[in-house]
Amino acid sequence: MLIIERSFEFINMAVKAVIIVIIALMILRLIANAANLNPFAWTSRTIHRLTDVFVLPMRRSMLSLGFEPKYAPLVVILITILLGLFVLQLAGLLASTALGILTGILQGRPILIIGNVLYGAVALYMLLIIIRIIFSWGRVSYSRRIMRFLVDSTEPLLGPMRNLIPPVGPFDISAMVALVILWLFLVAISATLLSSGSFR
Image (cartoon, rainbow, N blue to C red; front, side, top):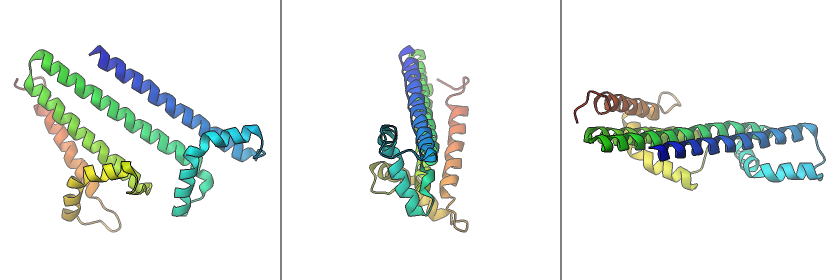
């Protein structure tokens, strides 16, 4: 159990450190842009070399959507925070599921083991749907491997939901309905299989 907790703490610190570094780089990029530094100076070239890997793809996406590309560093900051949040949520989910399964094994409670496996699987699926929604808002192409994975893994639920629930004007609410249904499953699993009064 201590190994799982220490691993989660390490991942937590590493993700937060990455988020802080990327935000600091984007702030430097914004300051450099506002100060109109000489583009051939060492400072400007170094800042651009460190940040172009994040900013240039975002600028292309924003241009294709008709947005002002000069705000790309701010959008990178927002996406970094959101993705960091999802990674932390996923790490916490996996750690709590692993701890629950281990507790069930040590206590000889198979119902607790099954409950934790089901809870973790449903919560992970919800997380994948939320990430897919955000990536689709950001117009991430299906040709990208991560988007293909998200679509292929969530479409078995979202496809039939889309057929059952018509769009409300221009908005497709099938994913939101799917998330509500999955949340109800989580509540049911928690109340029955994970409660302290459940059968062994």
